[in-house]
Amino acid sequence: MELLTVIVFLCGLVFPFLYVGSWRKNKKLNKFIQGQREKTISARELSEDRDRLNQGWAELDAAQSRLAPLEAEEEIIIAVGNVQFEFDDSDKYKEAISSLKEEQKAVVRSKFHIEGPTLSYNGDKKFHTKLVKLVLLAYNAAADDARHSVKWNNYERVMSRFDKQRETINSLTPLQITKAIHELKVREIIFTYHREELRQKEKEERKELQAQMREEAKVEREIEQARKQAERDAKIAAKAVADAEARLLTATEHERAGYEAQLQLLQQQLQDANSANTRALSMAQQTRRGHVYVISNIGSFGEHVYKVGMTRRLIPEERVKDLGDASVPFPFDIHAMIEADDAPALEAELHRLLGTTRVNRINTRKEFFNVTLADIKNIVRQFSPDAEFIDYAEAREYRETLGFSKSDASPQYA
Image (cartoon, rainbow, N blue to C red; front, side, top):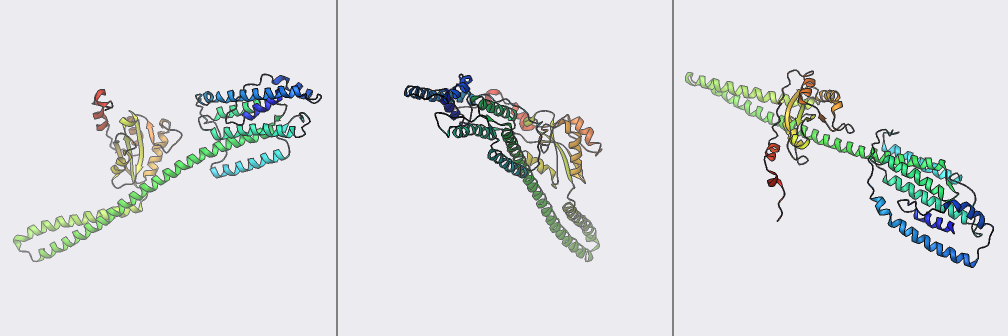
């Protein structure tokens, strides 16, 4: 009874992967179904059917045992840069997926999801309904598998496999999954993939925003600390000047020269303290003033890879020091530190002109460029002719590490 074998085989399709063996006798299916309408099943034939059912279960077990090698199959990496995103917000995709599910329900209610003849078997009036449910169960399992497994690096492969799974299901019985429901399922899978990609992107953007907020908080703390220190220094210097002036009034001719020199020094200190206070206030008000830096890390990224970024820190070298934390094996070397009234604008323009040399062209927040330092100099000096550069990357820790022999560097085991 080939039909029972087919039914058993369809049960196996509920599993995450569709195994498409054991259907050699499919060509006789239509003739078999038509014949079953006209003949009475004898006890001997029922016994044969039972034997074939048991054989079908055995084939199903063997098919499932062969799924493991298929799961271990090496994935083909396929770029999906040509995939067009219809929305720029993951919540919009969530709404679109909900609408697609409603459309699918409408298609099912209208019975446009399955087409084919009404089938019967051994007088079972519910046989057709049961077979429709079984076909849909297998198809939905394949769709769920595609939706859950699709990623940026297997998009086309998963979609191609899902199309073939539909073709396989359609080849097993006269019942056919319609194009109408299949297109809605494919669209749901595509939207699910796009939503996950956007959610990951939004997660990275939030992480970057939080990092920027932490950096801005550090800048504000530095400026506030510098302002308070300048105020304290100014008060101390003002008191010292007042004391020196009072002593000068009562000083003898012999003492006057020394007090005047001391007063002049104290007045200069007061002026410096007031200037520092003014500068700190100015930095707090001028939110775009800062430094654009050019740094490298040949121990971590190799030769001719430079990071071009900006910072508003009062001591910009502190920002570079933070970048060389535990996330990279070696600290960064500074090649240039360019002060600018509008550091974000200068940084953006440099990034634009260096755009074709980006190391990561997908995530533009990664500010690394594969370019020579001479090329960076030529671009920077269009905007800051007096910018100073350090050509040689000291990379002290990296070069000292290279000095160790391989035997010294290899791990030792007790």
